[in-house]
Length: 528
Image (tube, rainbow, N blue to C red; front, side):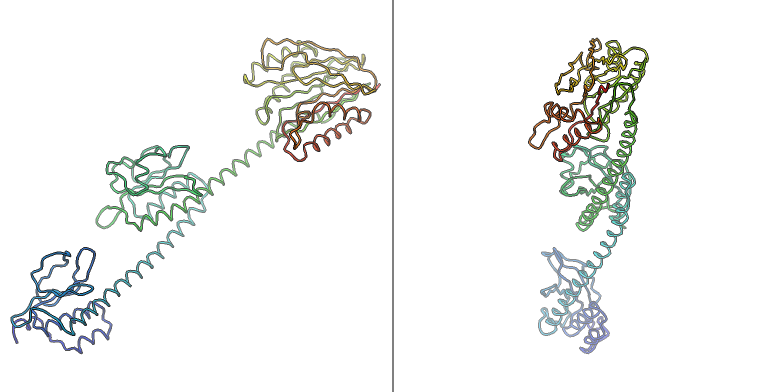
């Protein structure tokens, strides 16, 4: 027995090699025995089998005491004999009596066994990748459930960032939410980050393309960054950045699989953020609706629920706001000697701002009317109060009429309001003209008073322009003419029926369109 074969003991038979395959001891065990058998059959001192990898070869098994390199470059010069195989390479060191080149059935068997081992390895890698993908998807599913159940935006932002950092084994992270044309920092993990990022920042574009420059300053001190946008239906909601993937060897870059995982997580985060946003909006809407309902209830309490009775007169009023609350106001105030003041005011604008002005008019008028009779001085004081307490672009039209049942007289001041309509028993109509500018325009405005003797059957209609300016589907206004015609045909009916007729006529004219402005009506009739 020579020295070469002595170093390759124990001796193997072909049955020993096949036995390793039949026992399924593993690809490496089978390949190791096969390489040893080839060495013994060809008189080799040592041999090593390599599998082909990108850029070269990696050693799988070896036989003999020779220290073959663990890896080889594709073009590396070799000091050993070699046999090129379809899936790898066999290096060998010939013995004193061995051949310098190898061929024959054993090499074909080795080539087939290597190919089978490579395929088996690829199958294992794919199986591992599938199993890992399943674990990854399960983790993403659990993460998605965790964040989807959170509706508090502040807590959700923190949870999204912590879950992303944990999912990708990142050392750093930052979550930005979009505000207009900028991303605003919402939460950070592991270190500081820039407070704001322009939406069109070149660094952001480079980050999203995976080409962030080395001199980035998004996360101070971070070396390896990965970022993806958070958005739904093409609408950017935010930006999620992670940095420095941790491993047993320190920190490093994120592989492509992590980018895929972050993309899936970003989609779940977008859905969770959208749900939280909608929930917040719903809560805000519910809160506003409660406040509007409260404001509407308060405003309804400003309007009279019982109309005053007086000898020789009957009065009524009606109002319908265009929104929850409105800028129209009417009232009946008892003043001295059994007289009653009827008021109708129309604040510029609609909604809550107008409703607040209505409250101002209501309280100021009730305070002032105890100090001055209905007339120019009362309106001058009211105008001064409105001008001081309201915004420059706000004004109020107002008509106040004082009824004296003893004299069957009506005194009135019209501050920029629509002329009231006087309908006589014979159907003749007269307009009661304005007596000054609207309240709140100029502090120095002056006003004049009108007087009117009312005869039996005379009907006075004070209305807001929401009635006459209501529009049809043909964009035609209801107009004063239609109101006059309606008052003529209903002048002898009870006042409540006249109100109902006006209501029905205007509603029918609008034909289902949204009411454009507040609508208010005050009716006064001389009965005896």
